[in-house]
Length: 441
Ligand code: GLY
Image (cartoon, rainbow, N blue to C red; front, top):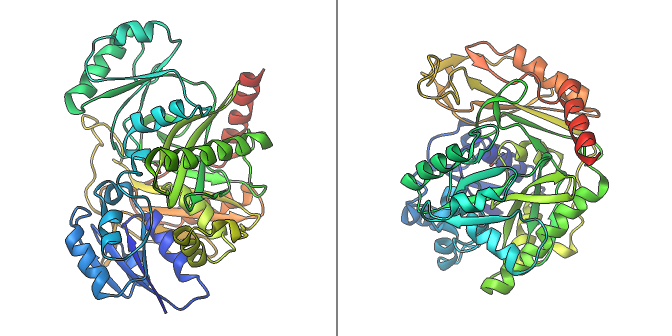
């Protein structure tokens, strides 16, 4: 029997749990969650509800259950050093140490790493710990992106044209960031289309999974505030409709060089997920940011397609033997749409902002995958809590069919839910294709 510890409580971890349990090995799953996810709990032998900072408790739970290795889902436990802690207990992890998780937790670390090792993909950038010098720097840029140097749950990036307009507003926003964070990263803005390339890495070998496009904006037509991600899609040909073949190869090549640079810089091997948030521009592929984990929702697009045993992949990541594996994915399209409470993601002063716990009824959703996130299973049924509630995933031979499947399932759910009906539709995809055509000229 292989005993696996999973840390995390979202839909991303629900799909990880499902993929672990699909293994041909005899698996016992043990889960640490900061709040109970009924989907993960139903797949687990035992569950510990715990803060991700409480490494002692997590370590004790792992020891008592004799786990062979751990999979770390979200960034918070990576940032709190859970991998280092478990390592001292003799438990290896799929997930980087605290120092290597800086790939996600410190924008400055990653930008400087690319710069030092001469890896293509950076914008012009500078980190500021005060407002001094910002005006001069942005004077030379056509458009600007600003982000705090730290974890922000995917919601910290502010883009000129969307979140602020003028030079003065840029400086004002930088000032606001500096009130809460020690530094602000100011970067040149890229024009193009974004894609997520989630790669598996054992420290030396890097393997790409199919690219996915996420939708961060809350409302139809990419309007409204940024969220953790309202939904995502992937294609049966393992590309995206606006990408050229070499774009994915370029994203992978950057990631391979970054993995090598991490080892040269720190002497440590990166073992886990390197999820590159890339943008394809007129001049090729550029890096927006790395995450040190699978994407949420993007994990729900790729893990259900995995044909290779995920537990074998995890062991190869830990043992450094990924190069010996042939990792395969089904040639299917996927569409993931999150259902959310209506108040989700709205600014605090919006009349519909916030959300009270509300009951939903999910009836038969034949063939469609449901991954729980912020839901509570009570005696009288299922309740949405405060955030993204359930990832609904259609999987089919074509994107149209996958999208229809997801919509069909969502329309059968009763309760005060909202979602983005445009994700995965022809109208939105054509907009992306047209946008890229204009950019490439
Ligand atoms: N899909 C965005 C993220 O996982 O950070």
